[in-house]
Length: 390
Image (cartoon, rainbow, N blue to C red; front, top):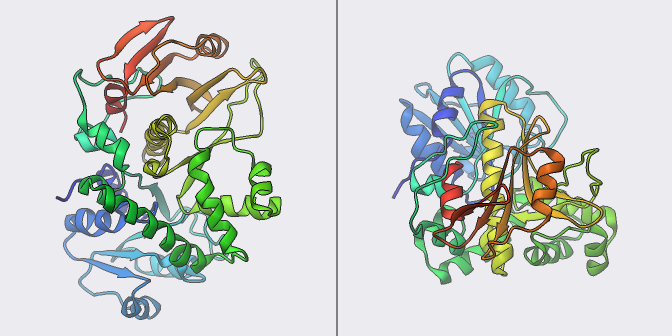
């Protein structure tokens, strides 16, 4: 069943002003979004995939259908000099065609250099399905207002997201055997088809081993040095591999919030996966699920509205820690502690709340039927809290 995506309306609107780039992880649904959802809102869309031999010829020759009103270019970032080519086509044909560019890499940073596209496009990041999107209840949270809490009752859709992740195929098939095979094939194709097409990786074998290690390290402070020792590889090489995996939407890192009122740690980030269903340990998977929902919320505020929302975490030199902090222009808006079952408020939460004057603090638990206040903290079931995001 085809489901409307949360970016459909804003992307359609922006296409009438500039080009639109949509980046996202492999198999997150970019092609379905572009062709089956967005394309149907135009009279005559034309789709070209760089991985298709015939389409490559048409792209290189700039042969666009005369009756088309939307040109969709998929994976064109694999073409060397793609930005210069696209700039020329857009400047020449922007009064005739709308241009939508999609790809499984960060199109705003990949292959820097060449002709600049600055000012010619809007960039969006397409995330996996979240609870609010599955429920068809896009959140209405506004900056510095409280997150709307969803209705009470069990939310079986959250169980599905927890087990199968938010990527469309495994989520809606809900088959464990399919999920395992899908994981293997997605990761192998990411390395073979995506990364090697635009990156020069000298030691792909050890980079793959790094990818295998990451699900076990989700939610913890991530030390590149420690991983380097495990892999018997250079610091620079491991740092580069991590950056490549991040640019291909396999992982994301959030960094500690630094403020003069707390003695913050300043270096080590925490690491999470775009596909939390790869994380084996349940508490870490739940934390990753919450992190993914919060990142999606922050990215939408920035990509759609230009609001500088950022996701970070809190930890000081005395090891007091709070899982997530959402800020706007570096001003704290709300904090979230993710707990699989525990409803007791840890001392670190009121400590940071007081020090940073955080307007709203939530302790989000996997347990259903929870909603109460304790020590200035709203303790709430994940099914009710996440439904208020996006």
